[in-house]
Image 1: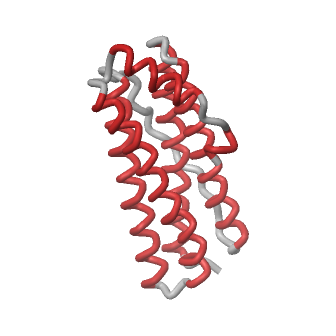
Image 2: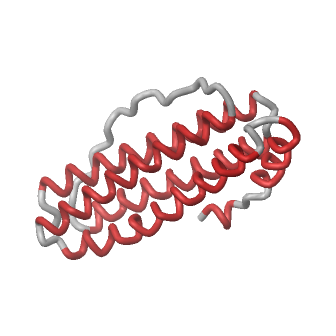
Amino acid sequence: MLSQTMNDALNEQVKWEFFSSFLYLSMSAFCAEQGLSGFASWMRLQADEEHVHAMKIYDFILERGGSVKMHALDAPKTSFASPLDVFEYGFEHEQEVTRRINNLVDLAIQEKDHATNIFLQWFVTEQVEEEDSFSDVLAKLRLVGGQGEGLFMIDKELGGRSAASAA
């Protein structure tokens, strides 16, 4: 059984994961509007992945006898200066997600909630991967100056991301 404190904290993370999905959909739309279909596809898959993360926590709450409470989401940012700006913002967002996951782990340890702690370890590992993915694209964008032929090469590479590789 989840404590009320842990239940509330996990519900807040469900909200945050759904917000992440909306943010990446917004980024996908921006990229599509710029004619960067590879970037748009990459972000759309990222949005799908965040939805899956939200549902993992949603299901866990129910499995532990908790109560799921859906919270309203803030509107995500919709305007960006460039693809580089998109990935810088996304990387900062993932760092915030990591901070939040770590706080949940700290709470689980504090409450001696071993099942939740074990469950959250998947997310700890996932966040290392998430930050690395954004960091990798950022490095490439910075290398090419975020424009020109290099931008189109990165767009083509990102368009090759499959749903299976996103999962």
